[in-house]
Image 1 (tube, rainbow, N blue to C red):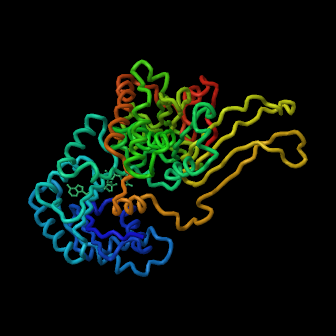
Image 2: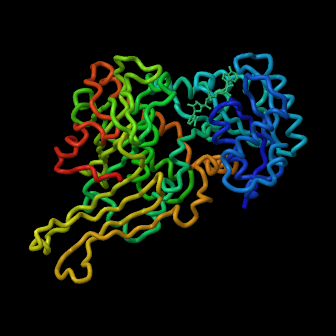
Image 3: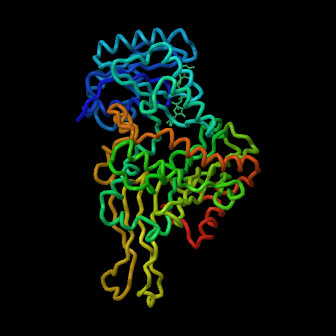
Length: 490
Ligand code: NAD
């Protein structure tokens, strides 16, 4: 059990992400003994706070997140310090450096530093430049940069951002968060595929009919209207999370389970993904925007009536698409992806549909055989279900669908580690496997840019799905054209 020591600087320490995710997950690492005593945190934000006030905030955030006792919380909070600083103000980086040097010494952090940017992306470039120019990245140990999504708005802006942060950090020092990669069952895709003799031999175009990846939310845009108007579901969900899941499902077995090998296999998948050219976008992709409807028994407004949203908005809150991966393994197997807000249920799921057996011997019972499905439940439930056909007692000569299920949460519900906890721990240990490499970011933006550029040119007929539904009809048509349908997500 490695216990990394480091000084962690959190930029945006009074924000939502820091309070809801970062402090509680650091506490969980501390409580489990996964964090050595040799750590200190400097919180940076604009607001004036004393160290004591900041420590009180940290305690409150941990207490509101934790389900069980937190006896050593005072000790934990004593490692936190605060520096009030406008990140665009050059002068105060000098003070921040002195503070860091002092704490390095006091906590014997081996000169290791982690810079966590929990702020709006427009500041990333400025911060990185200053960290470099003002000597904060001159360290004796390691230096790492953790950066949140969105990583750019399109390929061009992602490149600019990348160039800015590369002035201070090398590629292997940059940890780009994709919080889906912290989820237990997303990490499990690899294990299911590569630790079982029964799946990998079938994991190709001879035996798999299609793969469906769905991530649906019941929530609408909430308070994020301003951000979402410039983003939409394609940029917010597809470019990163959905394509990451596809890459993990489709990649070749890596020669080793290390960062470099896994990433290089994922990159190959993204390179093999067929580009959807302008004139093909409408054939392969469907966009949607929610109208009003009933959500959890309550009447909810349409997207265009949400706070900070243009009443004529062309922004999509739903995307369905068909991806083709042009390589030996996957030629001819569609990967369908679908994501949306204000849908019927909250669920992230992968369904692998196997091809039908060559001949149905059970047709006399007037039933069609269900295909075998492997369902990977990502959230909110975590687990695996294998759909088989078997004969139930007394049902002579009759094949009935049965399910074999493994529920991850059922076993250890309370201790299910949060995604951020694992990602932070990975970063401290220097394991970048579950973070995205620049090559992955660049390839997925160039795939997505083709689609968003086409959509920008044409006004959509929005709204085209009711809140609380399964999305627009066109999404079902997309699969029906291939003789398929979406497997129900709930
Ligand atoms: P937020 O608005 O709640 O917090 C922003 C923080 O930045 C505050 O602490 C604020 O004081 C600080 N700040 C703003 N301008 C500053 C300046 N000029 N100088 C110094 N400090 C300044 O934002 P958030 O929700 O915590 O999100 C932060 C980042 O994380 C964003 O990039 C967001 O897209 C991303 N993100 C957030 C979540 C989440 O759960 N909140 C999830 C995924 C990604």
